[in-house]
Structures are given as structure tokens and as C-alpha cells.
Image (cartoon, rainbow, N blue to C red; front, side, top):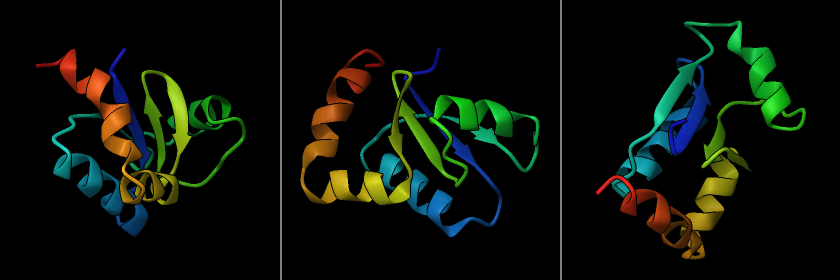
Length: 91
């Protein structure tokens, strides 16, 4: 299972923001496009405890929320702390 996963839709500014934040931190991720594969929507809802908005982001299988939550983690300095063990495994 990929360490970082993100469910996205095309032309979603929040999806673009989330991907940009992850890229700025050097994190690679598996992207699950709901635009290309709408059947993934039900799986995303189930994994994210009913959340229907994109993006939905998972670190090591655990949902962290969407772009707002990722941005807040970045702003308060906790994102690097959460990414460190995930990035160490890929180095």
C-alpha cells in the first residue's frame, strides 16, 4: 500500500493545493482520480468515514482530511513531523 494517497478530481483547486503542498515537502504520493475512475468514490467515502469532498488524503492508510487540514498541519509545523517517517522509508 502506498504511504501517501490522495483522492482527487480534475479542475479541483483544493486538490491542486494539496498536491502542491505535498510536492513542496518532497513527498511522493499515489493519486486516485475520481474523474478518471468514478467507481473509486464509494471506496473513498468508506475510507474517510463518510467524507464526500475531495481531496481526501491518507498517510499510511490513516485519513488526515482534505486540503484545509493539510494546510493547517503545514502552517503549524506538524506536517514535516508526520511526513518524516513516511519519507524516511522511501529514501
